[in-house]
Amino acid sequence: GLVGSEMCIRDSCLLSYKKGWYITGILLLSFFTSIGMFNTSYHLQSHGSQHIYHFSGEQGIIYGTVTQAEIKSDNTYQEIQLNTHFFQSQNKHYQVNGPILLRVYGEKPAFRYGDMVKAEVLLEEPKLPGNFGEFNYRDYLMRQKIFLTGSINIEKAEIVGHSHEIGFNAF
Image 1 (cartoon, rainbow, N blue to C red):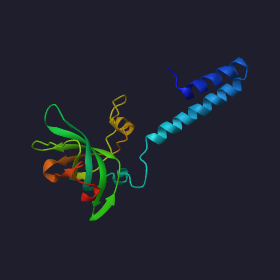
Image 2: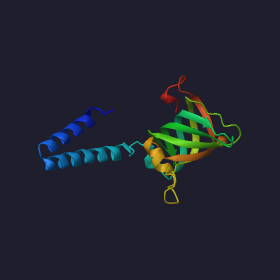
Image 3: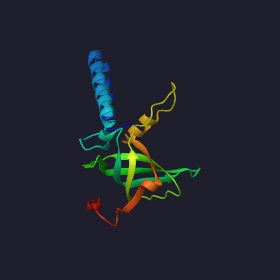
Image 4: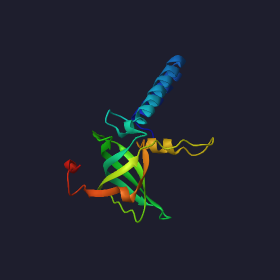
């Protein structure tokens, strides 16, 4: 079914068509199409000066809370989504926010939802597809508001607490 704004657009265009106001209908359709395009592009961007995206391409230590954790079927790695809190680079600490997607390699990676993690990582943007028509993983992640990925070795990561046990100040 149509939602309120879609019904308004449809009704406005139909009314202008029935009254012979073709230009009005075209202008309304153009206006609402432009608003929709702006809204879509706005929501596919990282927001704020503290967003983790500003550290793209940097090596450092990330601190955050696991919001999703999945061990891949072939047991070669675990994929976790981390809601970031702090990033340490070149002996400076930065308060950050925004999710990242990490692949954890090593013996029995077992991060769980709510684990507060400290890990050494190189933050990177997901790769663009190499062939025309190939699945665009970067766009897929952007629609989920994930702009950076990274790989970590389990030996260079540790659980520093659980979100239910300790507060933000543990970092």
